[in-house]
Length: 409
Image (cartoon, rainbow, N blue to C red):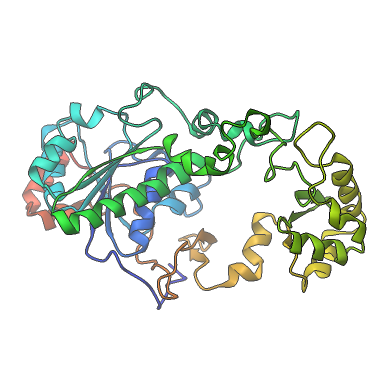
């Protein structure tokens, strides 16, 4: 794969992770761990494997040509295909767990216990194991056995209702907010906290990651108004969701958009002076009569102003003015933006077909260094033989396990 990086941070080198997850939240969580040095083994069933293998086009050709979503979520992992419903498959997982530091799974609560490979059993074999379970509603929730997806979790959290203009429908996020923030990133946080504690106690933990509960930090600002019913955040009525002219999104003459985030008076003043509207300065927090929201008249005036120029002309105007006014970019524009040219912000890989594919890079820098692209996303069960041979199984054992359907051929 192209795009290999010489400078890399591997603070998790030596940490072994068993990844039993699929779809988005768990695989992203474990990929982040792998990006920063952890050795990740992706455990899939022997039949279809992770369903994201089949989402989108397969540009490389052949069975190993996983879909683009799978490739975005599963670099820096080795692949093991294993039947966990069979006793010999469970035995293999238990042997792996005795050596592992972390296990991450995303099954519904109780599934792993029914299989006999839940936290209780695995922690008995390895008391240092950090076991993270990522679910929609958590292990103890009254909704723990209920099906759900990202939109449901965001809806139940209270966040979705706030995401709209006054009188409009809630706007569905185009990115999976609760899957990523509530599941993957909270999963990483929980695992790292448990690993830190283990350094003191020598014992692991069960980390219960609820994607709905993981939305709580996103509600910090709206929650600051709880108890003040007349000021309680509503759609299009919050300081940070379009109620005021100084913090809003505006369409430009060419149908594109600018984001204005001039919350502090100094930034609003600079904005007003830059657009030759000094009369707006004192109207920043002007409110509608009998309503705790910003002046609709001022918002409409600013809206009309932005419609007079193209986005490019607004960008030029504010290039040297520190007024928190920036363009709203589409993803291709964001990739080409100077911000994204920082090393390993985006990675480029070359598939077997010769197709060049962009891949999200490393979100954290450690002393200026990002993670490392060490392994391409694994084929289904690609490293099964290697992993089991390292566990002490013989070639004869592998042949038998393949014949029995415990591992893939």
